[in-house]
Length: 219
Image (cartoon, rainbow, N blue to C red; front, side):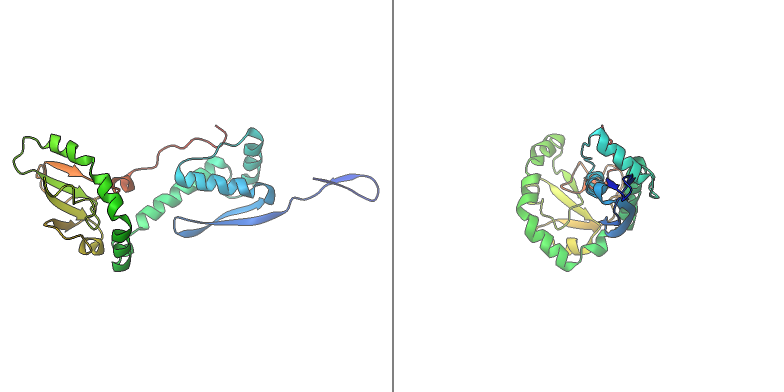
């Protein structure tokens, strides 16, 4: 914005700036100092990158963001995107499901998601039945089974082995004749090749996925 001096000349009024910090992937992250006029867009972009769904911005807003980011250690929108990816990877490396899901969280998860997990498991039964149609006693691995909320539709038709990293989740499992193994899905599993006839997984495998490309803010 412009302001007029006593002598009639105009000067550029310095933009108000403030430091921006966000809590992202469990830690406070400093993004740098930004003009207040672009902070809303900065925060919107960061949340979009976190969810892998970057909001569309017009060319003018993108240009203002790029100019503001050029004055920070991030350097550019590309640098901001790369930082978010690295922070997410760092959080994934540091996350310990066994420590996070203590008895209280395991009990809360089991209570909150019992119906939802069962409903998600129901559509798998026809596919598993077809895949194991030539087996007399099909053996199914439930990968990332948690507390066994998806077992109810499976147990009547299959012999199920549950696998999860979180011990307290396994100990909170729903009643049923299912053996469980504590192991990390991101590592080689403690089973011989070909021992299972099929594998099921509800709300777990996506945690192993790598980040995919996100659309640029101005695209």
